View 1 (cartoon, rainbow, N blue to C red):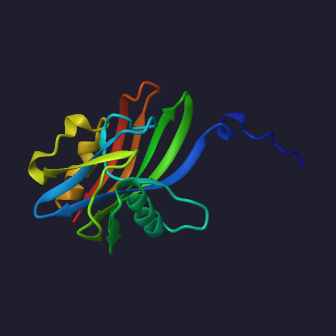
View 2: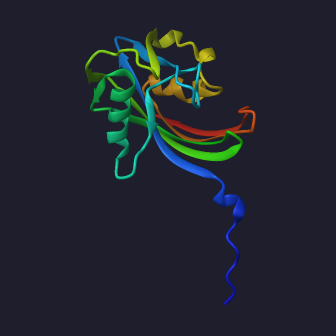
View 3: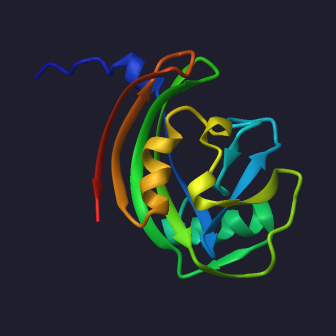
Length: 168
C-alpha cells in the first residue's frame, strides 16, 4: 500500500469558526467601529469573534458581545452561516461565521478598547463603511431573512465570487 504525501499547501490554510451579533431594536441596528488593530480594523462590524474549544456558537456570540460592548444577548436568533475564503497576512484562511440577531439583551452597549458602538436606522445602514460585499448578506438578515453561502476574496481582499442562498 502506497501512502501519499500530505498536501503541504492544505496544511498552510488557516481554518476557524466565529460568530457575529447584530443588536436590533425599534427599527435600528447597533454596529461597531472596530478599533483594535486586527482584521476589520476601521470598519463597522457587529461584535463577535472566534469560537473557543468546547464552546458552542451560541455561547461564543454571548461571550464575545459581552467582552466587546458590555452587553449579553438574550435568545440570539441565528440568521445564517457564511464561509469566507480570503487571505489574512498573506496566509489563506477559511472562516465559517454564524450570524445572529438579538432583540433583547442585558446591559447597555458601551465603548471598549476593541469597539465603539453606534446605532443606525436599518434602512440607512452605511454599508460603505463596512467590509466589501457585507451588504449582500447583512441587509437581508436585517430584513428577517436567513442567508447561507460562501464568499471568496483575492489576496487584496477584492471579491472574486459569492454564492448566497437567501430564504424566509
